[in-house]
Image 1 (cartoon, rainbow, N blue to C red):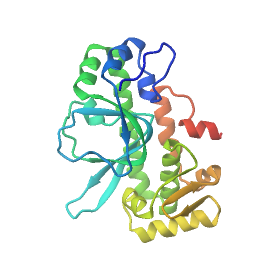
Image 2 (cartoon, helix red, strand yellow):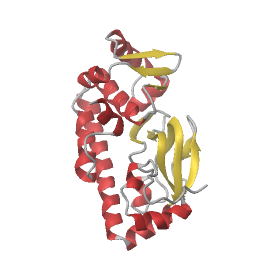
Image 3 (cartoon, helix red, strand yellow):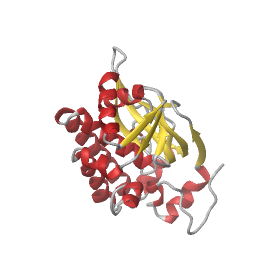
Image 4 (cartoon, helix red, strand yellow):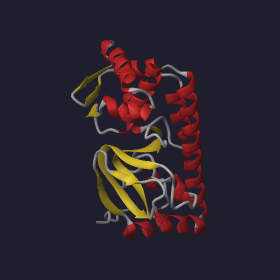
Length: 249
């Protein structure tokens, strides 16, 4: 079902909403609302990616898997962006997994249409390339963070990013999933989460995470959370940090 046309309505995805009205008028008939279910596979490595997804709720994780089966998250996409960057750059067979981490919904459209419009519209092309640059900066910052900062700092950074894209302070999350996202053993995540919980920053019970003290969580995190969000703001012209971060200031 395509979204209704409206001169003032927004789609609920910041990248889409940043596009010019004439571009959205051309996209609108091709945008299909789809649901996102936890653990749903959006893409498998090497598969043909015919569509791009603009989340309006929920969170998609981009995951790299090694030959021995170990996995680590290399990126995440919520209502601030689109899956996938590879499709924007012309690669229809990206080598990563994409899976739903938080449930929600997305607007799906053909990848080829997005590229055709970008080639014909320099303003749209510039917007998409700035988004690509923001994602590359995010990956670079995360790589440095994973090497230089403690697991507790990294865990706090990751929870802040997930919280930004969740619909509330409580959302589904397991230690097993977090260990895969952070690329560490489950025991390490358990210790880090217990440390955060002992300071009343979060609570965790039976696969459900609740953020109790966001400011305290941000103080525990390294500088990488703010660095990533500020880079998105610099490149895309969005004031402040993500929607939830601005609400909490």
